[in-house]
Image (tube, rainbow, N blue to C red; front, side, top):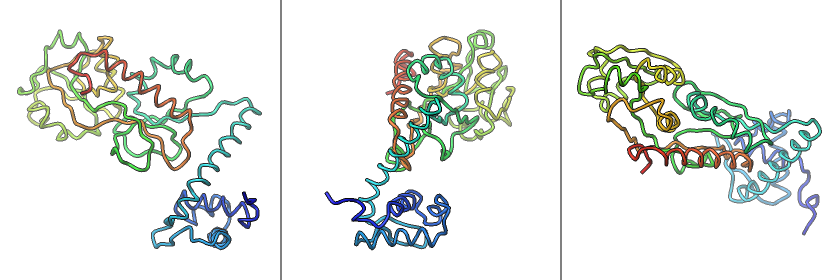
Length: 313
C-alpha cells in the first residue's frame, strides 16, 4: 500500500475536503479552519490535482460530490469522525469527564415517561451524561447539536439514522376522578359540563373532524383552557382539571398506572409514526444507537401491557 504522504500533498487538504463535503460549501469549510474561502477552495483543488479526479461539482447553489468524491468522503468522513471521537475520549479521561449525549424531545415525554425511568437509564448508561433539549409544543426541526431526537419523519428521509418508536395514536384522556364526576365525553354534543385543556400550537380545526361538535369552540358550551406547554396540559389532566388530547407515546405510563383513563371511546390512528432519529451529518456514535434501542425496547414493553384498544397494529 502506498504511503498517504506520497498520494496527497497535505493531510490538511483531506480535512478541508471533509468539511466542504459535510457542509456543502467552501465558505463553511473555510470558517471551520479560520481561513479565507479561496484558500479552502485552493486546498481542495490541490487535492484533486494530486488524485487526478474531480471531487466536487461546483454549482450556483453549492457543492455536490462527484462519484469519486462520494467514494473518498465515505472513508474520510468516517475516519475524521472516529479520530475526533478518540481525541475527545482521551481528553475526557485526562479531565475525568463523561461524554454528553444530547436528546431533543418533547418536555411532556421527558416529564411523564422518561423521568420516572431516569434511575434505570443511568444504571444502563453510567458512562454518559445526558443533556435534554426540551420542546414544549409541536416537534419541528432538529438542532445541529442534537445526538438523538424524537420526530415524525418520512421512512426514507436520507438525513437521519432512524429507529421506529411508536405509532401516532391520539385520544382524549382525563383522571379517573374527573371521569367519575363528569362522565364520558359525548363527541356529538356541545361539550357542556366539560373542561378542555388545549395546546396553542394545535389549531382547533386540525381535530374538528375527529372530535365532532365539541371541537367547535364558537359553539361549544364547555370551558376551554389554552396552554403553550403540553407537559403542563397533561399535569392538569392528571390533577383532574379537565380533558386533554393524549398521545400514546407520552401517556402510556399513566394508562398502565391508571392515573389517566380514556375520556371517551374515540381513538384516532393517524397512520404516522414517531421515530428516534440521529443526524447523518456526522458518524453515528455507537452509544447513541444503544440509547435509541433502550428507549425503543422499554416503550415497546409498556405498549404491550396496554389494553388491546391502544396497542400498535
